[in-house]
Length: 453
Ligand SMILES: Cc1cc2nc3c(=O)[nH]c(=O)nc-3n(C[C@H](O)[C@H](O)[C@H](O)COP(=O)(O)O)c2cc1C
Image 1 (cartoon, rainbow, N blue to C red):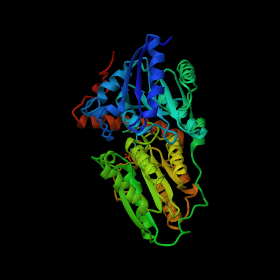
Image 2: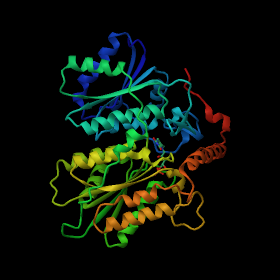
Image 3: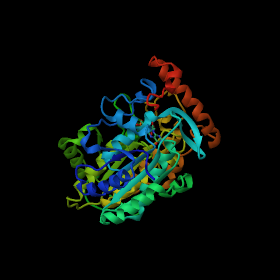
Image 4: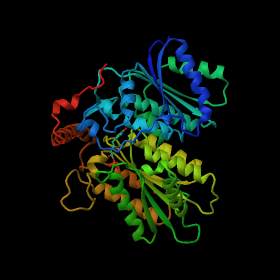
């Protein structure tokens, strides 16, 4: 039944020893059926996180530039017939331990765009992709988080051209026999791919009752920039800083912090937690990475949640999220926002709303929003949205949907979205070809299949 080449990516972190037994049940189930199973226990492997450099597309096509075991894991995945993602359900998403490698899946696809299920995704690099299975383990029951987790795996299956997928969430308290039969059923089943209508329901509504004016004292807004880009200015930082300036102009104290690799160490974690404790309002600005939060943001939320559950707080805190994604459809950000909202609920932080922008790479383009002689599409709609959000937040309230309605507009006025989406892959293809040439890579070489079996 399972006599296949199977790769298991075990995303249990250092604190997840209770997941050892369910994982053993899964491996036993598969190996008894003579499957060729390779399991990667990520907590035992030192991996670098993706820094969004796109070198795996334009410098060494198909191969990540990080010199670590990540490359072998990616090769094993593409050469498998089934890849199983195993993780504790973390705010409805993956653990940071798993997300570090999931972010590094992008060399498996091409930089070029196509239309799949009526929406933009990257073209396949390989002619065959493994079936994808997601197994999430929950320590407490949350239907909302389980639904998010299952949908997330389905979205990856679309992005990575999996021929089929299935995903489910299981309770850690189940006995081994029950888990075994539940695992067997999810591995044999195929779930329908989640399309637009299935994911827009995850956009979280702002808690309009939230007010950080209710308590005494000066208000402090903390901007957390979650883009891991180090070589160029990120769209997240451009949008986030613009908003922060608006809030500062209205008399709020402001502070900013860019997430870095030191989050894995105590120093970085203490720095983040101290900044959180000083803040009334957290503004989280980050890009969509593989349908959810980049590794650094996932790790930051784990660190903050762990800290806040041990800390007594005497003031209301709110969180506002600015997210941008590469594809033109802003709604592809819905699951990531759903995850942030689950985090906020778990930490008793009010959800002060969000801004979600599509085509973020083009809109940010490393330039100030108000810079004269900007290249790229117009950004007036982004400025309007940030101005409205800034006013709401400076007034101490949550952000109304008004600002989102601006940022989700097509950048070129009166151009229908269907034409914008049709043009987008053409601009994108030109951009990637130009980048390849700048790196002395011929455009045919962009299609390399280094791990073809
Ligand atoms: C590892 C990686 C994964 C990505 N995954 C997605 C994705 O699932 N969907 C999407 O629309 N864009 C995706 N993108 C594109 C980014 O969201 C986009 O480039 C964004 O504008 C970067 O924002 P920043 O400049 O703030 O980092 C991904 C980019 C990288 C590097």
